[in-house]
Image (cartoon, rainbow, N blue to C red):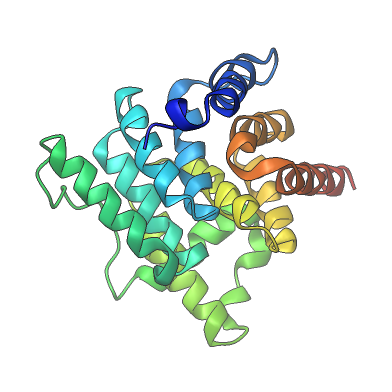
Length: 231
């Protein structure tokens, strides 16, 4: 459907805000790869599959590789669940195939079933500090979190660790209702060099896709994480 034909006044204001005002706001700009990574992760988080189908070609044209796109989709499963990610995986495969990309892509895994737990724990420590060294022992879900989320996905190549923490922040901010985890991952981002100002720029670029309430909640979580670092 051509929304410029059915809803021209709305589209004029939406596109002006989304693609001009937000993108070019002084002090809130991001490089193109980072901005599109954040937007794709945000659309996964808020379940905007139709908008994702429009955003993905723009992201590829802006410099994201097929591997980077797939890594965003794969990592989303740990934060959103396969029930919500499957339509995005299907859409990604359709768009990549239509653009002549041969699937499957080259593998990016760096762990085995034998070392995934140890590597996952180390990744948690790298992000959140030594306090995570024993966290995996606090029940089977914590063990799964270390081995599956961090050991299976965060250790993959294709994205840097800082990029992975940034997209996790976007998954959590966009789905809402995860403020304790969002605050924790805001702190994890800061530990990796994604500072307060950077995270606010990420929220600013994603606001047109998730609206003001979740964006303001995300800023509050960023501020809370930043204050905690001063103590």
